[in-house]
Amino acid sequence: MRGTIKYDYDFMSSRRVGSSGYKNEELAKLGKELKTIKLKLKNSKNEPELSFRKLLGNKKLIKQVTRIARKLRANFDNLVVVGIGGSDLGARAVYQALAGNYANLQAKKGRDMKVYFLGDTTDPQPLADLLKILKLKKTAFYIVSKSGNTIEPLSVFLFLRKKLIRKVGKRKHKKHFVITTNQEKGTLLAIAQKEQYLVIPHYEGGGRFSVLSANGLLPAACAGFDINQLLVGAKALNRLTKNSYKKNSPYVFACLQYLAYKKRKQNVSVFMPYTYYLQDFTKWLRQLWGESISKEKDLQNKKVNIGITPVAALGPTDQHSQIQLFMEGPIDKIITFITVAKRKNSFKVPKYNHNEIKYLTGHKFANILMIERHATAVALMKNKRPNGTIYLPELNEYYLGQLFYFFEMATVYLGYLLNINPYNQPGVEQSKKYMYGLLGKPGHDKDKKEILNIK
Image (cartoon, rainbow, N blue to C red; front, side):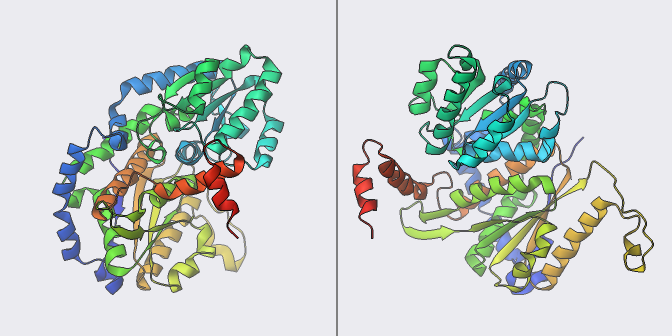
């Protein structure tokens, strides 16, 4: 029987880091609040915001995505995902974690598609560079936008659509597109219905919680990964949330973040995997944390300006850059390491006859990586800097699904503890209105006038 990922928070305790760490009685007090939070979650289970929890047993979704991916794999060599924010970062994170940085050099198996990502910027250069290497006739495009009105993916989509029509013709271009958007309104929905593109309904909730929906699963299935195991892993982690607080590791994680922020003014949370292919995971996590745990007002509409700043780091790379800041800068940070026990290869440092490097002879690369993380964690602890570590037995679909769900639930728990709404993001709306005004979108004359009058 497979296990679950583990969270070691020993170096977060006051026993280890003094006044910078949590006290047992503080954690125990918060533990008593879990019963109330569970009741809130139960009463809200049918709300769209919590629908990410329903994805875990959604066999219909798995069948639908698998069927579409099989058809795409039979007809195309490449898949280009066009989205931004939650419609992009989760899919990127899954793909990089399982395929690595060099997956597009060759497909893993015969019909596995190479997956590329666009739409997260209107910088024309990435688009131009990708078009140089893509054969459009052998490429499918997955366009994702919940609102269907987001500027960046819409702009890229319209450009690609025109390119493709010129290449394959108006009639044939339709089979190259799959659309995911809401089923009620929006520009993308209107275009998809008019052009008769294949549409997969967008998951009910917000984009940053959508990684285990079609948004993240379709690209993974096209690449040949076992999407069922992503959900099975998440479901296994979900079982922990039914336990008492000490065995509910996402809740413990949320409690320690809460105590660090509210009791010790530690308002920066650093996520630092010692696994090269989890870099995009920390970018997904940065959005999840940044949008969910940063709010002007609490649930009673009182102005509170709460926020925990997420920082994406990478070990051991950032041992040679950011660790100096973490070690000797302000004690306003808590660090979370993520590490993997089992690696896929056993490369060793070969022998070289030089006294200064003889000590490296025979050491496995994976072992060196584990030692680097441990040494960094201990050094931080000795310098009274709180840090914890999440351990994955190995990096595969099953444990990756657990890792996503761990942080989704920890985010929800922390939102409740902070008495804020972790699902909305009102702070991003005003800049969108100004953009619409400057671009000439109807109904935004007031926004255009306002921004142009700012000196």
